[in-house]
Image (tube, rainbow, N blue to C red; front, side, top):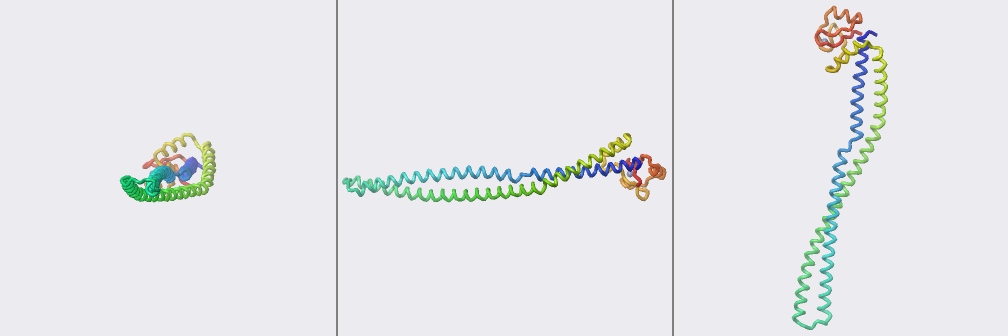
Length: 231
Ligand SMILES: [Zn+2]
């Protein structure tokens, strides 16, 4: 194999290495992807906080209601025990009892509202929790799919690198540095010549260049500077 042939082979390895490295990056992105899980978990924290608050409000409303009911019981027992004889006091007690019952009615309505708020938030927490479980399952499935693919690609990359190292040992250093320099700016540093044209820029290669390349010299296209390869 002449030097252009070696460089062409080297380029094939380099392009394949790039493709596989790119593929590995994509697989690793898939493996570490928990973009959807993070906001769901923070939503869960916030909903649990809301639930705790709502439950506290419900509890304190229940205590207030119990207090009022206890007061009404005390008034009723005074009213109906027969111990209170003073009619003015009895009227006052009745008025107080009526006011308390009206407050109890309002409190009960408010309590019902609070209870339904708690139920609503509980339902949200359940939905968010189910969403998190689903995302975790999807994440596990991704791991199962992509982990074997990852190790496959890593094995392939190691083999490609070893092949490359072996090939580089055989290539003339000056030719190698020309190749590396062109590769800095062009994906393809070595191109085939077909029907007399450079496949990099599609300009016709001069006969003398063609002959030198055919003879195995390292020839760069006059137009685009790529290394010409005749197989
Ligand atoms: Zn060219």
